[in-house]
Amino acid sequence: MTVVNGYKQNDNEQKLDILNLEDLEEKAKQIIPTGGFGYIAGGSENNWTLKANRKAFTHKQIVPRALSNIEKPELDTNVFGIPLKTPIMMAPTAAQGLAHSQGEKDTAKGLAAVGGLMAQSTYSSTSIADTAAAGDGAPQFFQLYMSKDWDFNYSLLDEAKKAGVKGIILTVDATVDGYREDDIKNNFQFPIPMANLTKFSEGDGKGKGIGEIYASAAQKIGPDDVKKIADYTDLPVIVKGIESPEDALYAIGAGAAGVYVSNHGGRQLNGGPASFDVLEDVAKAVNGQVPVIFDSGVRRGSDAFKALASGADLVAMGRPAIYGLALGGAQGVQSVFEHLGDELKIIMQLAGTKTIADVKKTNLINIKY
Image (cartoon, rainbow, N blue to C red; front, side, top):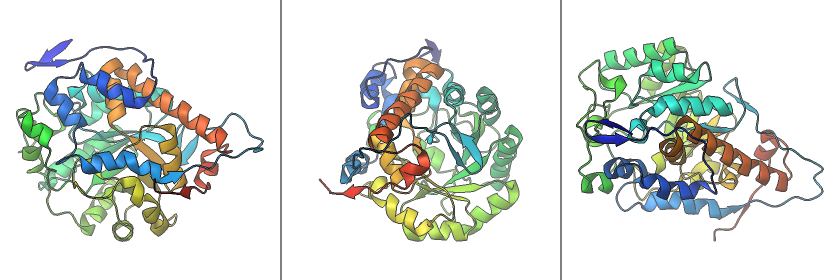
């Protein structure tokens, strides 16, 4: 156990025996301090959209296919020109030091071990360079919370390029903080510095709530910003926080190389739709022009299958990976992604799909139970 500013961080490094990913939340709650757990697990207001993210996966069903003459489904895929061993990636998730002393470094190691894509956040507990180094050459994206201060933005983008990241995820649905009641009840302020915030007026985040940190972020983000980042970095820019076909096409028109369908795990606009319920319409509007990433509520292999069959090219996961990190460090993260991959392969076999390309051509049926 490591203690930083009175906050207890777990140090465990171990593989996990996982029954299902939903069970991990309660186990992680026993070891993550109350304030940190509330920040990780909570949504906005009364968590309606957070809960809807899970329920939405019941709205479509997978038709079992017999006599398909396949065995040993394969998870390999290639997105943004990056060969991957799994279509399940790490969602950019802030302040992972709340879960484990090694934070994003261990998450990067876990993703590298499964051949997956890591995405690190502006609000990481560890620096861009340290997180990239921990991945030891495995592919990573950097997620930018755009600041009002463009010198700060350029500095982060320079560091990301120097670290060898393969793309920039621009988050556009967090221009203000969602009303997160768990943080208010717990009077939560970040006990651990955010390594990327140390250079400019943002300070390091320690002793602030997420709302105070977002106050330094840009409240106005428009199409010109997408182009500005793409031109400056010469990297693909993926716009995260899209939930309507109109915004997807707007992002592509602004130069986005990818569209990321997400409602921030139910942490921003409460009362908005579940991400899965809008995925198909967004993907149809995109019509293959750019890759589509999806997150929010993924807990099962069947969830990942349905997302891929509804138009996603990559499926991202956040909270379960953080719970795995809390319980077992890098090996815990590896265990989470391996478990979800194993579930996905079972679903693929039973649905008569050999490859991820086959999954993407699968027709689901739609009965809104």
